[in-house]
Length: 216
Image 1: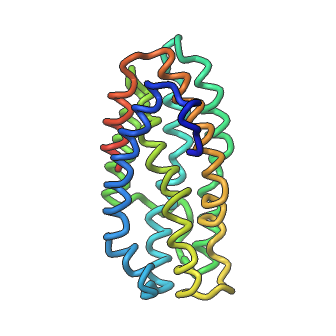
Image 2: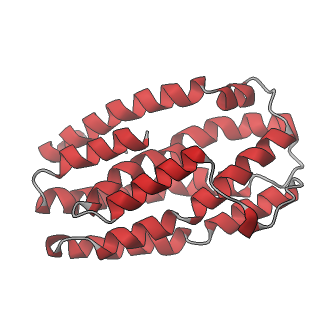
């Protein structure tokens, strides 16, 4: 995250090391997945990309819902955290429409309200909502680390290969490009959130890491 060692308090540095270990295991699994392998090997088809987006759009659509539910359940000691989360939710609440436009640009046939999450998406949504509604809703930051990190550190690797396979003239990459460019800023805001949580909740690290591991 671009932090100098001297600028990182010990509790935060320890938490980041634990999260980094979760991240590397997750990243390895992602790049071994059939979908990522097809993208990296240049074998992805337009139909497969359309199917991917079709399953992903309803997932992206609920991201701001998780965040706002988490805000409602923050303890009083973490009320300042709510403003940062709300800023993020506001910025991302219509991102699913950008992804849907990419889907339509590549021939996606279904109306946006007909799209539903696949079983994996349903499981993730249920977990994130349960976490957001809990007394420890701040631990949603662990899930955010994985989700936003995917946009910042995995998508930029996949996007050039996707363009090569489907053609640079295809206007169906706006969502991926936007997140590859902007999730760095989002991760910096996430770091601010971590600082606030660690200052108020001494045992927060354990819950944040557990949530990151579950989402990964």
